[in-house]
Amino acid sequence: MSLPSVTPSRFSGAASLNYIPGLTDEQGRAFGIFALDIYDDSLHVASAAWAAIAAWISSRAAKNFLLYFGVLYFGDGLLGLITGSGYLDLGIINYGVQDPPFSFKILANLPHLALGGFAVLSIFLFGKEAA
Image 1 (tube, one colour):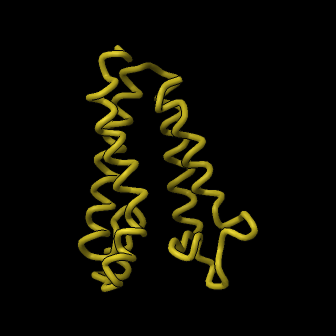
Image 2 (image 1 turned 120 degrees about the vertical axis):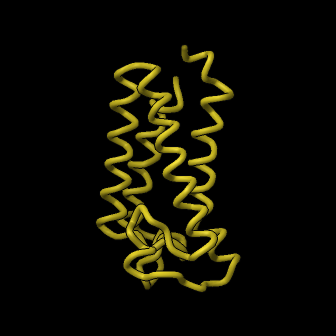
């Protein structure tokens, strides 16, 4: 089973976090960190669809997905770590530079940094196997 074929379920899971009882706090933040809204959910569902279609089309399409997705997600996490706002959800435009505690920035951006970084890294680690 390839990484892109597993990825859609991960994004579907991310999109459903706000709708699982007990995972959100009284302010609607998943795990007390992520304030996901319908726009974020839509991005996660679109990413899941993109990954599923890429995995279905070919290994080349899957590698392209991993590269483009990885760069976009990692960049979003890096910008969030530096400025407190990302660009995929237009946070940097809507809210500008934020100044939450650095530990919060790490927790809030770790999923994008880890997923984006692993997506790009996986091309180099497993790319020849998928050829």
